[in-house]
Length: 341
Image (spheres, rainbow, N blue to C red):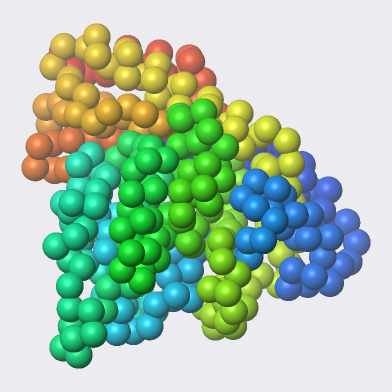
């Protein structure tokens, strides 16, 4: 059965798997002191800038929590959207392991703007309040929408005006870059992002994320934070080999473009189905829709996907690098049948 629940549910891209197999020969020094990791770091420099400090971890949650922990103390607060992954989908680990407080803003289709952030920018130097330290955004957002470079820059400028930093959860940064037809540096470094969690798992890798500091001074203790956070891989060559395969050519972009195109095809088909309403702008590889509970239950007997909001109800369908046109067309036919029940 093909899943439309998440791009996490797809398998590993054959080129990535082949790269891991090629790395599985002989012995080499562990903990990142290997040629695969070195080449992958060089590729991150090529994509994001020669002077960035980059470190590999296993998981997206770890990338977010450890990256933020490097720049926050326990009396700090991080401002984010109510829908942000760090707020709703990381089981409280930012508070548990980072120790900092999250302050949330109601988003517009997943995005926040300076106007929503400003009311939270108070209490600086007041001993009774947590101290605002970071604005955190997700690119693309948890609702599949994309921040433009101007929108990112506006939030970075606001943060920097107040002595704060801008963090980006880039679990699907590749999809955002493909959507806007821009390189990844144009959405991060060039817009004033300070700390980036860069994801590979959702774009064809088996596992592996990168934490990137655009000012290396922010990462001066990160090697210890990563180790204490249980994210220093002994056999890191298998993470490095995956990133080398993803970033060494155009695979990262091909995968993201394909996933986005399949979501656009899905949305086009869904719009023709009576009784189903698309609820969010379709800009990357996610389609959100509203339909009857009866139709949802009938369709879930055939496909695995999530009900995003039980109250509406609203569902989320996601495509991946390996979603085919046939997968989409079959899903739309089944949706039409179930919506007609």
